Length: 451
Image 1 (tube, rainbow, N blue to C red):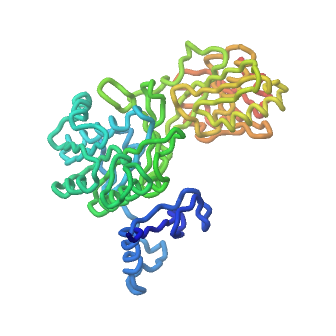
Image 2 (cartoon, rainbow, N blue to C red):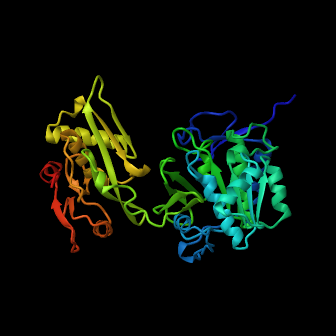
Image 3 (cartoon, helix red, strand yellow):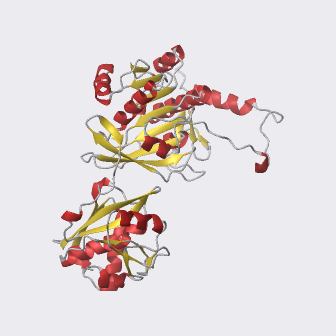
């Protein structure tokens, strides 16, 4: 029997190899070589050879290019529209990932119901649950409508045949790892299957102007299971964050070809499903329960300031000292501890240090450095910080405390929440009712930490 012809192509640079390699020898990317079937090789050759010198696109000055305006329609969720950049774009391919049970299927079924009530034909494809199970959840979400169609299927060709029967306006795939194609001889969820199915869904979305939302399982490390090319092929990548035991969920954009990735959607898990959080102020801290080792700061999630509590535990180590953080960069924690030992002569090398950001939020900006230091010092000395004081500033390797962006928005949130004091590196330009204590160096924080 003749061996089936296959080829491996790097998704980063296009390098081709007759065998799989862990690292591309051309561009140096790891695990970027994807197996192509004989049919895919033939398709690529025909596509690349179809254009002649006369028909191929020619370079034009950017000043002559017309700006493309994307028509959007609302999803029925204010928070989702905010993350998407204003609404759903027809023909877009969106990937949603997150931990099991965090609300991916719940959110998309609710959105599907919203669009069905608006008169759009919606197809919800599930490879993990039966139609009866989805019906039970739809009853709870108030998503029952004759325009919402359910299909419990894992075969891609069957899904495409169903789409050909009716003119759908919205498609949900739950999940991408459960689908398989007859044209690809491998198990569902494999690298080849996921890439083939994503390519077909992308072609379907672009050719029919059909918005497609797909759910992706994540690994223990928190990345989408399967090849990283999946994230490169889609138009938008959204991740759910937060503690599954908490009511609040954060939907963060990591890639968006139609908008900014700075915005974050905040949802609340209620009895009737995942709903837009009407009010999240004060949900990430409790002024009445602050104890030694707790410090408050204000971070920016997109365009919205949020006051959060940072908790620290400093205890004598028995053996090798441990450093662990939840919601905060562990490498940055190591840097701050080394800085405290050098600048303040604290013997933290013999102590275990643990950091936790309340509410399941993951801090991605360095503006919380000063609050982390304040929490560590509070736990080390076993003294409570003032519940009226916030700490705001980025700490450099030299011990200098630097200013943070969007200070005006942060100050307005601090005033709104009724806080009276703020420790920061420089006096704000705008007038404020909040009393400011300046700490230009990390050693200065000791003067104001317990004010």
